[in-house]
Length: 272
Picture 1 (cartoon, rainbow, N blue to C red):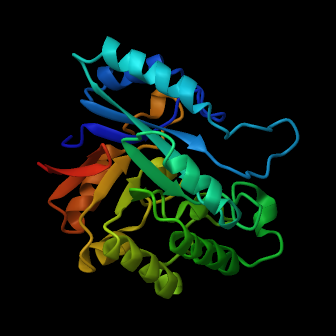
Picture 2: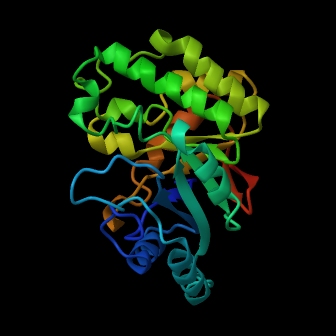
């Protein structure tokens, strides 16, 4: 496997993760990785269900302190970087802008987890919409968010929503949402932002990495070059999962390199 860096990982500093930071690090070392980036969740304004309040409100200072401690402890075995997965929300643009400047992150992943105050993870998002309407709204909100907030490095799991649709990706086609998705990709290229290949959907029964090969090919056609690879691991078992498929996707789409982002700067790594 040529890809030895996982740039989308969560420890128990994220409310939905199951493994401690040190356990994640040890598992990454055991799997032969040379570089990892923790990207703990920070979602301002998340619409919590009762009993879940604060799940995605990151204690960034505690997280950073532990990360620096672990970095020093394992510096001869693996490179450990400081990232965040920041949830984009049209009502939280100011909070996100302030937060993005609050620490010297290595990597900021911008993701959409909430649309009009509902997380598509929950079935109620789809209750009053056809699947096509639900997916289309998700992509439109993503593009609208990009126009409002630009202090990020990589767009995370572009078509995350298909993980949770009633039929997942059975009826999902890039061409159906081409106009909006192309606007998203053009924005990324014009603003020198990266696109993430996220393998987490494969564990949810999706047939392809996020995003699909058609979208990756379009990003490259438009001049996109910055592609990071992330497992979206929330436990030790899924670190670097399906990275062989991410590598295959990159090669099939004509990419010769993947990117590692550190200190907010992309470095290109040649595929085998």
